[in-house]
Length: 223
Image (cartoon, rainbow, N blue to C red; front, side, top):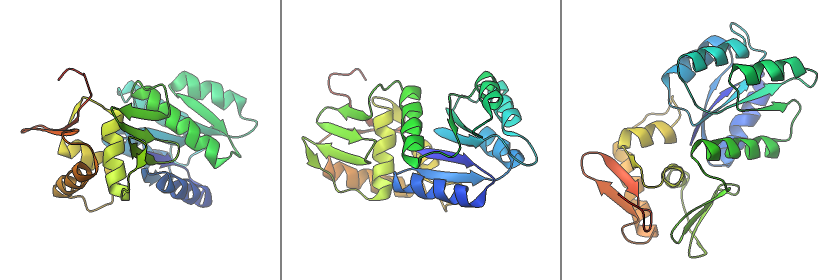
């Protein structure tokens, strides 16, 4: 899952990026509103962490522009402790949740997981597909209760498929959601990750839809 961090304070931005990476996410960063608006308007993020007090263009304006352009990714805004008016303005502008600075990183990650789950229509932090279970809180996958040993990229691919069960996901979509913007992307590597996952999952759990992409098979589901 790919996240955009919009924060102009370097230390906090680095802490957020480190925490997201440890939780299995890939993150792009922006330290001003102009760059943030461009990235959010042109890249397919699964969620955005948006500070409101930004140089060049404030966070509220960025958010309003995204929503006016039809960008629907979940947005978690960060506000100052006494900025209750910013919270109201942020929610009115289209934010999905807010967090007051200073905050505990565990709470931010929990809120982020909840936003991504709701966007995909999931109610629980544990995503299930037949014998396969993905615990998004601990970035851990199991099959029939047995833990899977996954690399970071394998986990990201599996996580994205688990958040979109039964949907056909193209290779280009997977590439856009498992790599940061500045990463040297190669869609051929997706085939490698899919092949590795197939060796670790029950047979036929990941289907190839010829010419279109891949689909996580839902037991008893309709194709």
